[in-house]
Length: 305
Image (cartoon, rainbow, N blue to C red; front, side, top):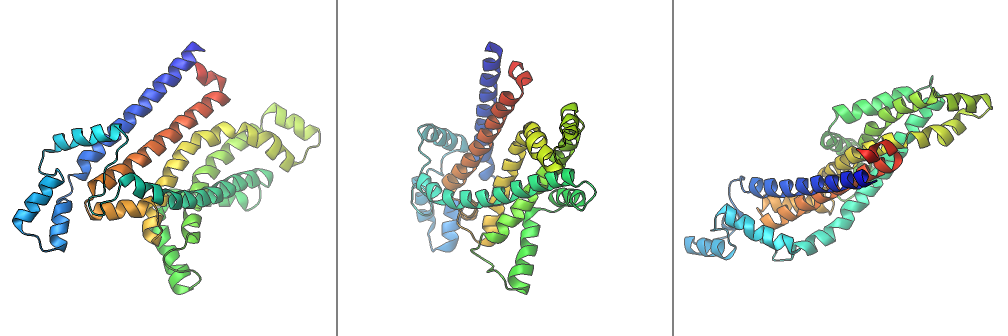
């Protein structure tokens, strides 16, 4: 038990170190992009050299990168994400208003992906000689070979421009389906393989001997025993979900963190960019930590690692 707690504590320390590393790398990488927000404002307006120098000094951009990092880190440690340079609004407030849109799209896509992925894997075991095995392989190949951004562009071209069924911007149906199919492709194939292995176990053969139907065996015996595989994949799936959600928000003009991040990057609004990336880094690390805890809870052998 003590070793289990020690392992959990070490895992938390590793996750914390990852967040810190992401924060450091992100802070310096965003400053590699040529120009800062003052240069962007100067290009948009009519600022003299003295006004540019005064504005850069007011924003603290005249100091060295190391000094800027120490100031930002001290503020972030207090929970202060700063003010948006371009909009003069608290960054935390901007993120707070953008999060619901991102969560709504992510929830729709995740529901579609889990339903499709688990459904296809189960159907391919129940009816192994029908089209479902082919569909499992097809969606798996789809998720590997087709980037969600390219699929999103094709969906706009087909369903919005050629067929005219949906508006190009502001609708979440197509992006949720695109991300959902990608999630299903990541889940269906490994889950199907694991279900086939479990199907050869003695307790499953005993259930067949008792006359239980294929569907009953899959949903009562196979899927519960395949839960560790699904949980092991959840970290990868949710990390991909976050990236796909950001891409689709930008592509389909949806309000959310992806749109906020893109606008901030184009405007060199450093505090907003840093805060958005930090939020997503924390989300991914939290998902991975929860995945690790669930795996340890389901598999006693991992509690002593």
